[in-house]
Image (cartoon, rainbow, N blue to C red; front, top):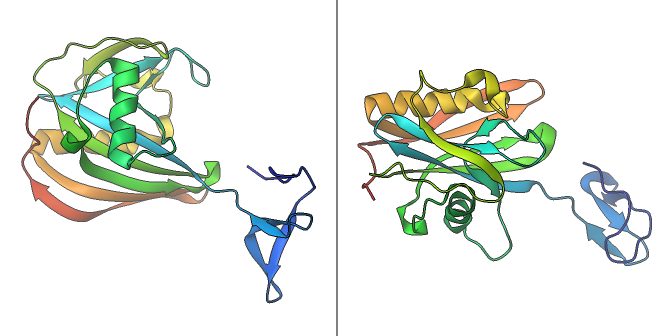
Length: 198
């Protein structure tokens, strides 16, 4: 996404130059101030019940009717875990406190200007309640998952990793970088066992 106009005064923006070097943000001459086009922060939560992960089928565009892991954009004033817990509650009716969220994956998706942070948690019950943004919710094993109807297949590799970690009970903290040139993921920490049940 490219910023064209100042959000404060509406004047056309230009590339900010500092010390003769163009920067990766914009500048408004009328306000005499830099204007940043920050990446959006997406928070998600992989919720497991045994070997099954919680999915939601989207009711809103983009990708309405397709399945995704619960998540959405972080809102002002929220911690990362609070945002993930809110999205989980809004989309699936599953209520978990932010303290129950365990950091699981982080990464950048440069070609859509996003940073994402994923958490993980477990529940003892598969009871859900689809919210206004959701057509339905379901827990799927890896074999049950409707892979042909996944909203964002470009992140299927991360979801496959979550299923592998569930199968082994060994959970790393993963960092991924997705660019137009390719996809890289690496473990940055390792821990054993699953999180506490609800």
